[in-house]
Image (cartoon, rainbow, N blue to C red; front, side, top):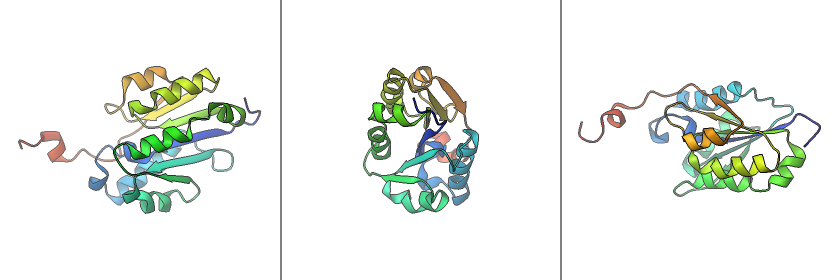
Length: 162
């Protein structure tokens, strides 16, 4: 364990919107990034921030968090998979960070959380209510519930029949 209380904060930007990224306004993107960082107590001077996003949204996210390491990957679950890859070296992470915060509700991070726990790294999952994998939250040492930045569009709530 690192003697410095430095945390690795890994953010799945699109998962924090509460809607499809194409439906998200600029204010929604800003709320998702800034409020999630505020909710987990991000400290720019000590914490290491990694944000993963699809290529279509890379410039939007980089403008909101210019101090973050940005990981860009396209395809189905591209950003999720890129972030999982960044979390794979659990021995390296355990030697440098006192905690990992994963800001996402996607079930795909369940293995990362379990591997980090096995390496002795406590993990907090920061996620949206009603949009989060229960298997993920059950695996995490701590859970921080985030506010939803966007209202779900009417066509999503009503479905295609509307």
